[in-house]
Image (cartoon, rainbow, N blue to C red; front, side, top):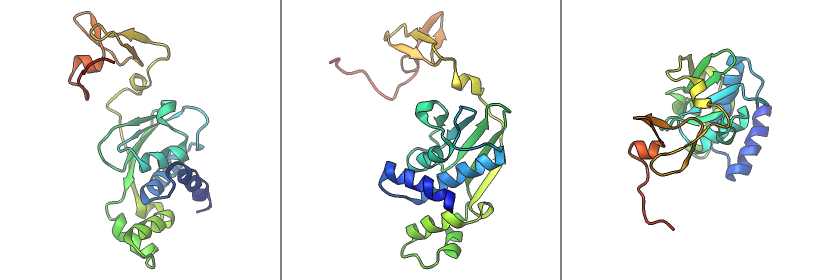
Length: 194
């Protein structure tokens, strides 16, 4: 609980509050460090994380591990799941961790006097034993971590829109280079230029 306090204070500064998903992120990140035998938060880029949802949970994972989207050590796979896969880039070991399916029901054993279900989960998740709170398993990546991390300084220009593409995210077709939004359906459509 003592180690949790420092991380929860950092999260409060990011979110103005502490919530159950942030606590799950902290606990999942701490367990990953233990299972992979890594000192966290990391000072280097040895640990790489795939988080399966954004928001409070991802920030909890980031605060405890030192892995952030901006440091290119965290990657969002938007599956809408409170789960993450932790990859030791040195050994290649990968572990996926997620909350136990019965965690909400089990929370009442650890914080029975809380005023609401939300407060009960917030308190219980901080003190529940990891084996009751979380599930984990070793996994094999289906993507090469080196392709996600890429090489620094690699830049190309899209043949269609003329915009720069970094981190080897281009698609080459018929000897032409395209950004992914020009090559496949994009999340935006082109409007009037300003």
